[in-house]
Amino acid sequence: MTPAKKTIELYDTTLRDGTQMEGISLSVSDKLKIAGRLDEIGVHYIEGGWPGSNPKDAEFFAKAGGLNLRNAQLAAFGSTRKAGSEAENDPNLRAVVEARTPVVTLVGKASDRQVTDVLETTAEENLAMLADSFRFLKSKGLTAFFDAEHFFDGFASDKDYALQCLKTAAEAGADCVALCDTNGGTVPSQVAEIVRFVASEVSCQVGMHAHNGADVAVANTLAAVEAGATQVQGAANGYGDMSGNANMFSIIANLKLKMGVNVVDDAQLQKLTEVSHYISELANMPPNARQPYVGSAAFAHKAGLHAAAVVKKAWSYQHIDPAQVGNDTRILVSELAGRRNIIAKLEEQGLHLDLNQADVREILDRVKLMESRGFVFEGAEASFELLVRRGRPDYRAFFELVDFMIVERRHHDPEDDGREMISEAMVKLRVGERVLITADEGNGPVNALDGAVRKALAESYPDIFSIHLVDYKVRIIDSAAGTGASVRVLIESTDGKDTWTTVGSSTDIIEASWLALADSLEYWLIRHTAA
Image (cartoon, rainbow, N blue to C red; front, side, top):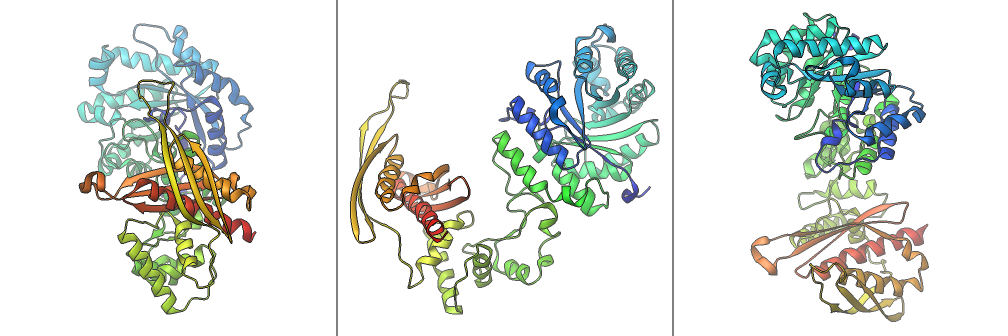
């Protein structure tokens, strides 16, 4: 059977295995929202959690009935019965049944060493645990999957016993045995060979659950499909314990676009980037810009040669059309840029300026000069637009900082929670023909400076207070200079509708912050007054 003719099932474990990633903690509301978005992109099974392990997962399953899923079935996760007990009385098995999902996945050992050294039971008892547990689930009319934990390590240690674990579960009614590369150390050639062998030996569906310890989880998943696996497991953005799980978004895109397996339709494929970023936001994890297919840098071009070629023919440096996965081509502007980068970037940002070759060369030279001073424009596209505009002879700035003074009013004692630093800023700002002097205080010098400047601008632009800081990053550029080092400040701002990033650089952190802050306010004023 060729891959194109296979029916491959997508089993997502973001809400269970994905939440084991360091730094992720999802509320019940978060999990319900993520489940809804995973259903939108055509996932077949959504593993909601382990109802027998914590109250949050139990609450999720109690509320999940209201999701009205169109494509996916919910799966509850649990473990085989404990050694020496009975399946009917096992609290974990009772919990997964009471979750009232049509599918239950049980994890069980498929490694002789794990059985004897970790479970501290016998090989025979582990087989009995598998058989009893799956017979119990099937007696309740449930679809039952077996996550064969540590299978690949177990296969290397004792091939016959690892296979016997799979056969025991299958004979007891398991609908699929998912081969787990739990430690993530197997490579694709080994996976392909083992999956092909297993598929010829067991009587049920074979799945693949890959972890990314060796950075080949997605490759292992694709190799498993080519070798006969018909269920693939993964997590959104590759979330998971240690180095994470196989990235579900990369799996989907590769199966459909590279292997011809229509696991989702074209409209669902186009939602991958949006859903990836949505889940990142809910998980409070910064999106990985370099994530294949859906990352903001997945189709970004920095070198002048590359940019020039992509503008002429998109396929010259892109392996797919980014629009297929809901992403875009981005042309970056940096000291490596050529004139074509500048032109393409201006077009991308919707800047329609009458520029000749000398103008473009001047902009490029200015970018290179500013980057030599610590500025970066790759991720600060608002500052790049302002750099271009300020070079035009007819441009007039909305305001100019004439002078400012900042006073620190109180020392903060780190051991005293009731005290914090108070700063006061006084600014002299030229707005049009007027010079305004205002003051404000804040919990730091930049906060106070921001408040004072807005007070001055608010007389002419009262909506200026709609701008909010989203992120503030400081990076030391030349650390060898110690306290005399230059710093770069990136500020991300939003007005609730649009989001933009600006940059400042100086040996003085307050000045660097002011440069980024001033760009943020001026960029908004340009867009706001032009609307």
